Length: 495
Figure: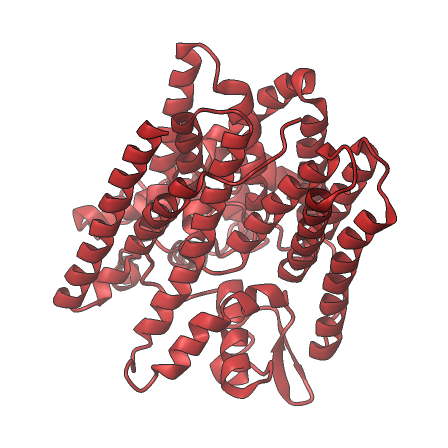
């Protein structure tokens, strides 16, 4: 088993800059919504008042997952996502007199998400290189991970998903390093500590990933050649226990109630098979993961078991939640942390296949990029509000019984179709939404919806900026991306 190592030092920085510049160039214009807004408000409260009271920043409608205790509104969402936004919110507080429209805050929040996804890309590239893949192949899969899957959307919105993805993949790398060690030594202790710290941070960022954390620990105990001694075990378990303690204290402090349970089968159906949230539909390249895991089972059985066990843990924990879909977001938010592990399996199994198989990889990657385009051009909140308008205008037919289930399980209301439909109207300047909508087969008389036009805008930050600052900022980012791409190409050729 290959012991993971980082990307070559001369490649890390240009790869990070390339991905960061591209993601920042497509930063959103829409204000944060859902869990992302709650996390940002919590971080702002920590910076401004030193408390977790988010009442000044919204109510129960605009700030989901909040409760009122002792006259204060506090978020019950995971603390880790808010802590990651503290630097961005500190900048916002420091510049509020210079930026009355809060554009600096919005840019800093988007930059935080972009930086985390860029780190995911760098770590993923380094892991593939350590797995024995060539530099160009590893670069292809690293860029496909970011831009051909919903991860590109979470590189624009700081809701904690990008950080959870990074921590879960780093923990998996550290677990493999712990297992591959033949004897206890300094490197082994460092790997164990890295595993423990990443798992502890992971549960603080997303407590629902505790099951995945325990699976990683159990996998280490089952596959480690040398016994899992007390020193190594302590370095793994103590940080994990500290993370669980932080979660428990935070939930007690804010007065969080026990999490309700949803329908497990419905959640699994939604995350894997539904027309509105399936991981395979939003990330077509992941369709190659099941056959890739079969191949790995014959050549790298322990690693195949790791991918399967972690995937099962993440999916089961996410599916039993009533909000398994994670809306308002693009794609299956709670399954996104699995993408690096799944794509690593694909890379290991498919990189040496025949030319026609590599062509299939290219086609699925191109389709994935095309699918992400309407997702980042139209805000998910905009589409969900349009569906709400359709529901109201049609008298709430039977498929609207559970909001917003129609967007998850009714094909004609899938966001994949809906965003493309709205984007087409926006590009063409067409106000006639009643002509050939995707749900035409379900409604004999589709509503006209002319009133949605004012809120149908491109979700791109430059739209709301004055021309000179927007052009200057985009030009600077474009120059940074071009320079990083040139440097990356030159260094990979010389590698």
